[in-house]
Structures are given as structure tokens and as C-alpha cells.
Length: 311
Image (tube, rainbow, N blue to C red):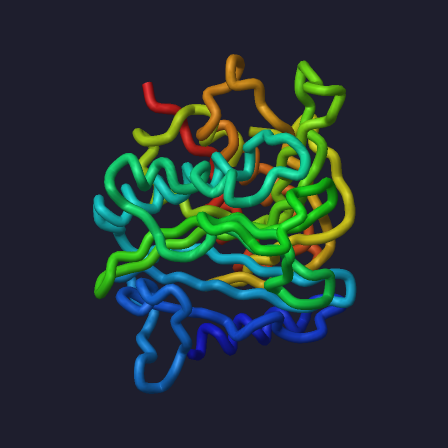
């Protein structure tokens, strides 16, 4: 409970803050296995070095609404935790980099995020993504990404904002979720079927994905490099995540568009992760430097060190 309160204090210091967009989920160990856990004095647990810590949080700002989840471990995660986390991450990347025709409905994309869990007999019980309002509802339709169809889903269109949030939950032990906001944008494709532009996603949320929870042997090189310097990054104005010690303060300031890699040239997982983390370092690091928050800046630098490829 104190972690949630501290996180809200950090957010309140940011420009244009108007309040939380939903009640913060801050869950340790077995509490994290409860998908929509609500913090209470009866179930409250201390953040330790022995258990996974999951935090799902967001806020309203006058220029946007945020929703983000990160899963952390402050000790040494087990092999099972690392395996599950990495499969969730691979699904997160697969959805974030999917290319699809316009007006496709979200249920057609849901399996992109689940495939690496399914391949070993695992799954999660919630939807993979929901629409995000602009200083409105943090869960806003009519579109979404899930195994079920949304009754009024018009199909995905350029400019929509959704969440990308696969997870895995082992009852009584731990829970994992990685959630970022993504924006629907035009994809750069070599062909235009029926003279139409295809679409893809650009990641908006900037927050480290903890390296110690990743089993690099399960990643392709390009999945890791998407967490190396972004030579071809285009910057717009919307959302940045400001990291503070134990966790994160959200601030709506920048959209940073990650470039898409050619799979023939890059081995996707490692490239994605390293490029993403380079962007986090640059954009969030600048905010922390301006705020003179040296402790948070040092934490950010440690958490975004590029991950080396396996020999």
C-alpha cells in the first residue's frame, strides 16, 4: 500500500497531472497472480527480494491518459519466472510489431501475443488490449484486442490508441504482465494490396523492461535490439514514463516512434528490446536530469544497459 501511495506522490509532481486514471494495482508474490488484485490491509504484503512485484498504474493529465504495467524482481528470479516473463515479453513484442490491413478487428491479432505461451501449454484469462481515452476513460471502446469479438468494434484505424498487455499468472505463486500503450500508424510495406496502406503499432510508453527477468536464450537477436541506438526515430508530443526509485511516475510529454526492422536484416527480439531501452534512456533520462533526480537516473541507466547477443 505504501508503494502505491509513493507512486501517486511522484505522479503528482509532474506537469499537467490531474489524478489517477484508476486505482493502482501493486502486488507482491501470490497477490500478483490475481489479475485485478486490489490492495487492502488484509492482503497487503511487503516488497521483498524474494518475490515478483507487479505494478499496474496510470494517470490523467490535461494532455492525455496513461496505463502501464511492469513486472520486477529485486532479488534473483526463478527459472520458471524468467521463462514465463520472456514468453510474455515475446508476445508483447510480436503484437507491438504486427503489420495488418486496415479495419481488421482486434480478435484477429490476439494470438500474436499468446503464441509463445500457447507453445508450452500456458495462457492468460484476460483480454490482450483495450482502447485508451484522451483525458477520458482509461478503458474506452469500441475497439479492443482479445479472443472474443467486441460487439461494436469498427476495426483498427490509424490514430487509435490501445494497450498491449499479455500476461501469465500462476495461482498462489506469481503473476506477470507487461503493458504499454501503442498507437495505430501506417506501416511501411513493399506492396499495397488493393491500393491500401497497411497498419502497424508504435509504442508510446517509455519504461524499462527488467533484464534480469529475461531468458535471453529464448529471444531472437532482433527482439533484444528493439529494447541499439535509434537513428531513425521520429519524435512527437505525448507520453513519457518517469522512473522513480522503486517504481515509476508517468508524465504525458512525448510519443517516441520506434522504427520497424526488416526481419531479413535483424533478428527481431534482441534488436527491439535494445532499441526500446535506448529510447527510454534518452527521453526519460533527460527528464530525470532536468528534475535533478540522480538516484532515479542511476537506476534507469542500470536497467537499460543493452543486452548482449548470445554467441
